[in-house]
Image (cartoon, rainbow over all chains, first blue to last red; front, side):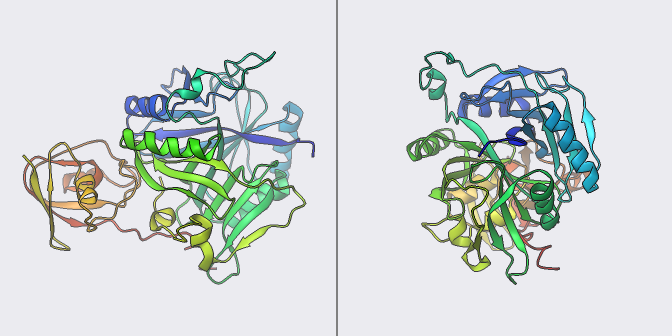
Length: 309
Length: 105
């Protein structure tokens, strides 16, 4: 499949309660690379193996949570097309000028019926991963700094109107539904996992009464061994761990859920199956959600359903 | 010198030093009276009302603690550090839930 349209999750902007504490956590414990700070006081990070200037941006606020989540699209013509498609579908869009975020081109912003602010953009400066493009080594010493995930992988967001969000992603943005969990009565989706390429998910949503909530941003690890190493580093640094290390039934991914110092959950994630757009959606009934979340323990952890920022 | 924290709802008592949050000390001792969430002041599930005692606090989300809350000692247990023996009652609950709004359709 030729990957066009929306390419991948490109950036998340997350609110933290204490900027310095958060910078120490994201830089020294999670092992992201700090790439800049702007006049608004935002701090920009990327994962060591990402080539674009930034993927994870934090700003100090008096409340935790997600400001917005952005996807990189193929090119500016795609950006213009998707903007007009969103408008034709009935969603209001806003243009954020190039340079409002460091090293980032013009962004198209819109708000989902779940209350989450989404962005599309076509341009972000390529700063590279520190490895030459000619005769590249497989990794650099940056891989050994902290947990050191290789990329921002996906996010799980909690809010109302998941059925409407599902339609926007599949009918306008070109995503397809990889897996879902049904509501207890089986008549609707309690949670959906959506892909825009061949990753097992690029974004996921769960039905929740309060709009705009962040469940987690997920960072990709290279192996199960690296997930276990992440767990060791979390404990060495007294990071608040939620669930894991374990394996999800949904996606088949290996995982640890934990929280940053402001209570924003993050995930260190590895694996998952590789779907194609023609594959049939896999469905979990609500009474099997426990296996979907934590396959070995078959446990529907209460915090998974109730703790968000 | 650790202080004694009393959870009035359950009658649980546990030791907590001034270097440790009310929530961390409780969870470390395997007690369960206060719901445990993010432990970073962001999610709000560990909200308590301090009934008596002195304490210090660290920053916590205004989504869950208003000025009025703060004035009345309604705080997130993960961000409260005791400076004396202290008693509290639990306000926070793990009450909101996935599919709460979808199931209502």
